Length: 165
Image (cartoon, rainbow, N blue to C red; front, side, top):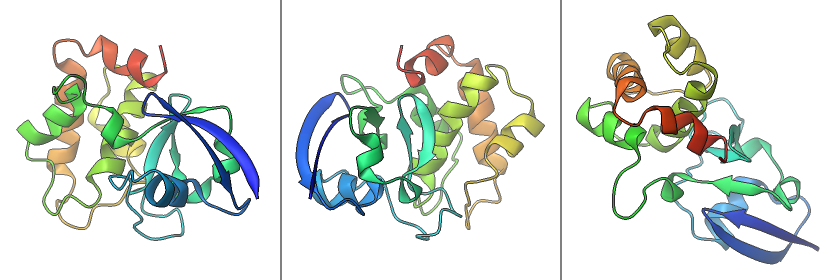
């Protein structure tokens, strides 16, 4: 067993865990952060994407011990004071989901994308989301949602909040 201390969605947790525990398992099984979903167990689909110190990672590809001393943000940690995060709101307003299984990871990756491309082109959005798979929507409305979020009031705060500022 190894002891880790990690801040998740603003709360600090200290736990003894098996060194081989994946971050996605720790988040779901130890902390109850079930919005971070397991899609493929192979890091191909991106459904488990979270932010580690403000940048996106596939949590099925990171050991929980690697998050020791770091900050993790999950989909549950985005909304503030009952208000959806601008990216969550853009996904809702642009009908960028159907079954919703990929949505948490897609939103987390889209926020990270805006760090590098605050005013992204359609090509930059599509390329930036390549590691996240959706089997329902055909991506058109997802791309539309990311573009809308980038142009939304307060969009400049999207990248700074994701980067841990």
